[in-house]
Length: 347
Image (tube, rainbow, N blue to C red):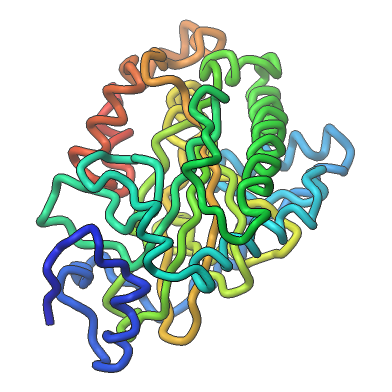
């Protein structure tokens, strides 16, 4: 079974016919080595850190989680739980209750990578790439000069207001977490945030419809995020996996938790003391799944390099400096490729 690659075709629509036929189009079938295994890892869940604990204990847990996993979940994070629920609710409503014609009116530019709006394809210029089993809506939220709620869904009525409030809380939490990550490295709390500069924040809602062949597909292929820090919430279905010591570990959904994912620029700034987390999303045949990822990235003109405060006579730079915009262009040209993009900068 094949489909013609067209930006107007959404996976949510495709899913209905595929479930009836019991097979997915060939463009969505992963190479055998990339397909998800049905056997769950015995390594348990990624770490969960209570940010209300004693500061010294929190720093110790952050250091361990960043050093061993590159990802963790936080609770007691000062983001209202009702806001997390509202963000999930309006996102579900857009995908499930909004008419298809209305959703398509918000379509992103099919010829431009990471353009704002409703879409399905991440790599717009690669017709040979295996496709992800997901639809998404990408919001440009920070700096304020990029934020235009009129480009976002009007349905449900509180959608735009919820995204604005959520954006502001995520920025504050990202600043707090980057401070903790800096301190856990023995650096001033402002070090990583100053190296990143003003946040360019995108909020991407991903919707993963039921898939008749979850053993052959991925909702999102294995990759590490290109920016500095990603904050993610998911619904109760689950499907986010993080690579740990060669095994894929499930990130158990917790309704009051936010998943923290270290991204590539933080790996560079830390000179490899902390590695960005390779992660992916798996599908299932029974229930749709939803997640909301908030990306905090440098400006594309920003030059990123290992922190000078971490470089001593015994610690030479491990990464070449990079202009962030060049890194983004390379990432979209080559594709996700696990951690291949960041590893290409190793000296």
